[in-house]
Image (cartoon, rainbow, N blue to C red):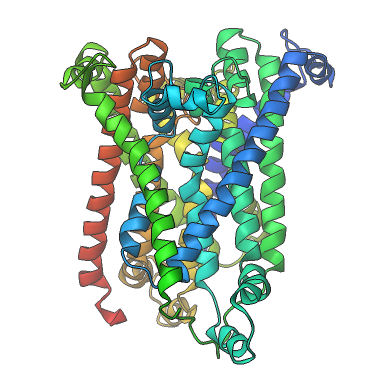
Length: 549
């Protein structure tokens, strides 16, 4: 038991050092002046008196709200077609719409520039529709819709997947019209999923940095303000204030989501019958057309980035060439950044999975140390409400502070890896906890009665059964580490620059073709990693999960 408590204490120390301390460092900066004297709310008052910064707050709020209003109905319609129709090619459509998860968010911004930018293919069509240019709010809204859509879709697919067929059978027997069944059974059953999807979409948009940076132009939002204040103007105090403002919507949406989850009731009881839609030609045809249209838009966005990365000289010479890949990987030294990304992603997957599972195991399968246990649970849930941009800024203030014994980590690959683990910790933790809760506590009780050490039970029973969850956690960490920008944009050095940051640098240098090539390479690497993890999961299932059959 002492070993377990010591392990919990170590997990708590790590979470305090690499999560809580950076956040407290932001608060400290916001309450001090440039010389380190305490000034209370003076920085907040100065911010409120700066009209341009207040405009950025307003811009962030209405753009995030507009993207949410657009994405949720589109994602709900797609999820409804997948779950409540008998259309064909469901796996294909679902796989296509989840492709943006494997790409950095700014790939959509780059594609939009090639479609609708100053030399875009459809610029004339856009202007005939009354839109002067894609740069600014229009580009941010469209690109964010593309990036956020798969996140909302996954939540809504799950929400619509849990349905009791008896309710629909009873409604049909009573002669209830289809539209009435939709509004009285389907929507109420999916309302919590809709709320969660809306909150996730709003938070992802308001905290995203890459898309506004690439296609935002002079349209400022909170995320770009933080970058300009800290990197451009070296105004750390105002930067900390904006970071706290950026943290507020995320904390609010997290709190609302937890409240909604607490009020959610079980949709499927022990007597429930799975809902199986019946074939209906007109409905299935409409569902197929709708899903094909959405999938075509996704492929058009992804395909344009691929095409532009091979075009010799846009838009005058479209002959395929590898010049952009050569420029990016060799001349611009993006090859080194790409290797750094793979190194960081691998480290995040290995060490992040080990830390997450160890913490979850010690919480779920050991007893005692109530206060220590509560503190670890609280900190394990905190990253879900902390934007990556805020965490990265906090790491600057904390690890770059004079006299900090951990200051040697600043600008190292280790810090980039640790920050990424902290940023995505909560989802991995919840996955591990879910897998461990599925195991009966009697495994540990029987082991204790036979005087078998807990680590033997862990090695022989717990780990083999939980291996699929471990692979899922490692895959989640790896893919997000490959595509993240906001969590590491403040922390890299020329030697530790990662590929997603290299895209920003190439875009700023006007090398849009090389930036597209780099984004495509990240997408390909993420796709290959997904295939590798899937193959590993299949092999593990055959070796360790045969008992499930």
